Image 1: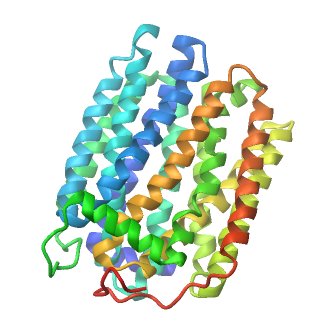
Image 2: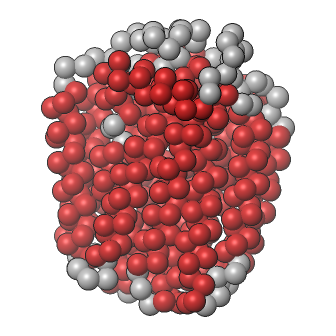
Length: 412
């Protein structure tokens, strides 16, 4: 905790970026949880909530490759400001979801939010090493990695409570206010968010090919950009949360607490893993272990007869998932030079979110047909199988020394 407070105190612009991310992620989930409950109430089907989540991750997957090139070519601060405003407009659309006939507007609006995050996230991740010195980078990653989990806890739990108490539309209005605040915080950042470029910007398609070529030539990087997909293929379980909560008789508020339990795990996971980051030889084995824990915990959820035990198992699963996400981000930041970092992170997130989207679509198509526990067990088993195959494929690789910030695209 002293290290966390020290980094936040000493680096003003990192602190602003962190609090902006808290607002963006909190506002996102503060809207999504009430929307899922609203769509279930309006249509009586779990499919629409699944489609909304799939639209979110699908927009990310489709746009991230291009978004990464934007993060490497243009002012990252301006990117964050523009995308915050775009997210604000998407939330305004949610206010029009008033009947079953316009349920599709909810899916559209969440897709717009996903598109905004597609440009926001790689720019913020790529900017992080420019806002703190290398000796503070591990702690800064743990802090930044906690932002999503922190505000999923706050946003999801409060979103579920507010949906039950005052309805979804007030929560949408609060989300809009949060996004205005995030825009102001980023506008106040003055430290440059990227290193000076010594060459002319590469055209977008050529830049993407360059990044993919870099990944292909560097097996360690390839192993890191495929690791998040293990959790991704199991993330279809999110589509089952409203129905799982209903099976325990806890309704929209209980669904919000399930998402909050997910966020709590994602918050704790990065801090538990932080002390292990200095031992580079352990990173790949730890990533495989974290995938396995995620899958085993959700197998427990599929069998759990009690709501309280289910919440605990969801926390455990996402402690592993959050640690997995942060550890792979940290390793990529050390392995990849600055001028390629935005594109590599975009590719990394594209692969992960594509896995999430496909999992959500499959589970969404079956959620009104098969027993919810069967679907959860199948998703958990998919994660376990992926973890085993990934570890076998990557066991011969070890992470090398960190690259120089000035290193070129051909340097490992």
